[in-house]
Length: 299
Image (cartoon, rainbow, N blue to C red; front, side):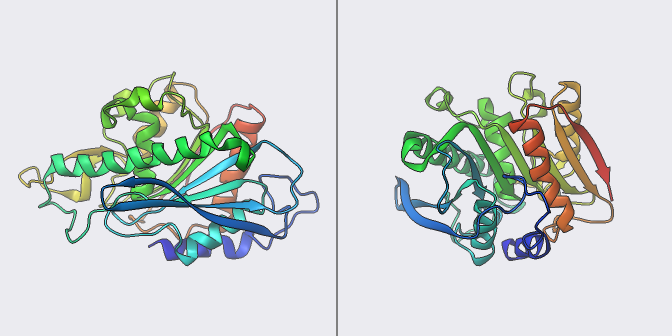
């Protein structure tokens, strides 16, 4: 699944405009990377890879955090497609971190997997993301990070994890006060969803980019059951996807960009190159230049 993300960048990573804009276009030719351990949870040693542009003179740079997909059962921070993604984003001038989080091993998260156990898996991933962000903020001076400009990017399970720490933190995190100082500035989600859309408020709404297939049967575009489970199955629970999230943000007068793909399901990771490029245009406009912008695009 994550391997397909590489196709997003093949075209636009080679595109260089006549007037390059940092954080939108490629402005660096080379980057460095290093791996750090940010947490140890039982038998899981959780790591993150930090990518930075070389010879950068700016001291406080936005942080772009990648949360991989894989249904909470598979996926790695250092898959070849995610390395390619991280390198290309770092060449735009971001500090980039690609993180591990706890996965379920030797079991399938499906309609037979109990709903309460599913929620615990979601919660573990959200807690790990918050711990990774705490680590990065703790060492922000070493990484030359501006912690007021943290951008989250998640795919599928990663999108759910990113969206839930923004909009459902009160529901999914028990000790939320521990993370009260972690306040991302924007979130980009591919095929993501949350548990409780009513917890989206004006206070927790942030600029959000959403990409979703209208016919997604795994993570619903609207409000429906996770993995299309029947109400009688042990794994039945509701999720609300990009359509519902965007409606809440529209009411809250918060900037958002929604791409809805007709006749497509969960696997939308071969995004048109310009669609993904527009996420960086959006972040530059709404986060870095404090402009208001809302758009819904259907293809």
